[in-house]
Image 1 (cartoon, rainbow, N blue to C red):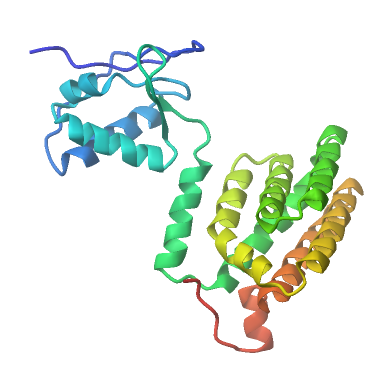
Image 2 (tube, rainbow, N blue to C red; image 1 turned 90 degrees about the horizontal axis):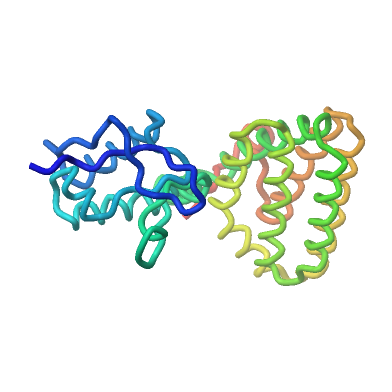
Length: 275
């Protein structure tokens, strides 16, 4: 019997199939594609696969796992959907599935589906967003470099020029993810982007339903300039307070919502779910 394809790290610009002492094992139980997914995930967790490594060809993987090529194909598609792999089309050394280093899209997709399926209340999401933004702004106020602050100011200029609500929302997300990165915590930008993308459809719909989007656009631009100034001040608690006020004011204006705990204390009202 042929020896199974094995894995290893590659650091070349055009990665070659990875290989190492640890080989993939034949699939013995469960649905075949699920076991393929598990073994590839384990190879990443164990360090046998790293960002930029290219997997063996579909044919080689099918031989290594001793499953059909459709099973391998299904597993690779699932991992692509979750942002673990990216598929490079074509032939030769540059084609095939490559391990990605930006899995935030998979996290966002998963969170968005759970929000919808479980009908998670918007107020619960707002509470988490307020906590995350407050924490990120607090860290950014003490750690942001002059170059990073200049980048934030440029993003606000781009937001001012973005008269289309969808383009504005993209720049807005980039703004808040940038602040999360400034906090110095590698997890913060992943969750910030995932959380924002999970509710982006609702926000965009609210923008488009506004009777006077230009006025709201102008208010939002002014708000973000205020946020940049709060971070630039270097006062951690002041920046955190500005972030908290911004989240609460924005969602109150858009949806009439406040973070869950505060809303329950004030009104005892029923919380709205996201469809």
